Image 1 (cartoon, helix red, strand yellow):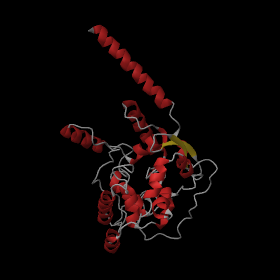
Image 2: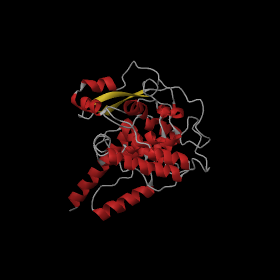
Image 3: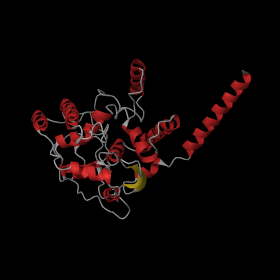
Image 4: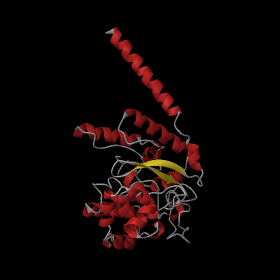
Length: 315
């Protein structure tokens, strides 16, 4: 028994040493502070192949934080990580709730990843479900919160999320689905894109499950109204609107069938400029989570710091 116990201790010590070295070798977070920096990361297409993706101003779809509508920023915070402005990268309360839920359901259906953790995974890590990857994700998320502002984290997150077949980032998604720049999106269109985040490939693919995406966007719009991001009139207009995505099923089918279209739709070296100009003025004087100036969201009526109602995302 002592022999096995000693062997187990040696294995644990070796694993801890491996983790320590792995964390030490992770890339520096400080590089992300520079808004002029463009880094190349790996993204995955719907057939499982990896491609280079430019994260930064040299990506022609790059959308600066100031060009992202306030409604979209609040939508992703309220829907995906309601405690975003309270936690420091890891939401301990959400983790406890997820563990309790999974024990009750005897499954691993619910996760507790914050937006910061998701960003760390999207930029630096694979999607493998291992303890080692999760530890790296937690470490990177904590480092990001130390090095970056909440506004910068939101800006990066919204420029790298997957929203379609080789459609990464809200700048690309805005053009792909609606033929608009991001700052031209309506509240319904903003909520519609955010509603797809849990599963744009299947569960929340608008061409397979349009009603499901619309229902989730209705919930998101209700959250925006409850937080006074939308006025009563704006909320009524948004709920009544139906996003026009007719004719795009062909694009999705072609993207899935032909691998060469992936290269055409991705951002590769040599493309420069975001193609979007900063808006001339704000829609209204409300606090914007993660605005370009990176000032923290003030505790005001419109755009008040979101109250944790939904918890962190399960991805």
